[in-house]
Image 1 (cartoon, rainbow, N blue to C red):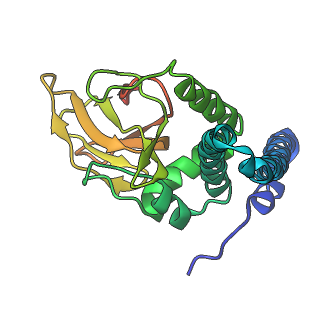
Image 2: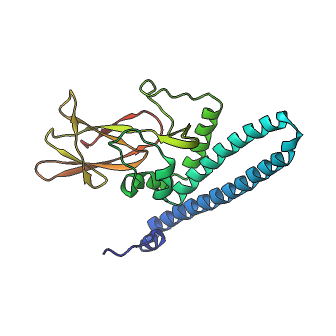
Image 3: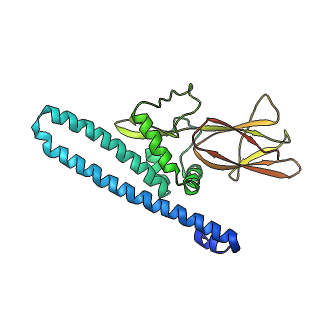
Length: 244
């Protein structure tokens, strides 16, 4: 079995300015994770205090009961969002399998398919803030996604399913332009099935969960060309040029 090497050990194995810059980026990501974790803890305590306060006032009448019900719904939604972000931060694939709902049977939820999502958040700690902003727009009704009609869906659409909050991730497709029409495509080290398009040099692959991916074109003569693509927000169909 290949021995596991932690990110700090790999960085320290470098030298010079590149090693120092990599270590600085790693420390910045670690600091962002710590701040995010502390923020979630404070939010849990605050929501718990509010629920307790309204529970005490429950006996004051139907009006209070109605307000408590509304608060409970809001609190339940916020707790679900915090759990989602916590599972991503902890790279907890098992927890995400319970929280996420994917209706496309061709997209399984497992350690392998969720790894690109974890990789994206590791490289972009600010993505947690982007999720908060998207959920806020959904709560205010400013972002309504109609499947099949909207080409720029939220990264995660939150809704109630079987009396609990679930998150439906956006599914993305990649149109890869290759230099050789006979080239095969490998995504994150796995050979994938391609769908032909009108252009013989453009191959359609997907769908994929949000995350960071590498797409490699393997030519018949063995030559390889690789491009990196980040699927996180924006258009559902991305064009990637692997000819250069």
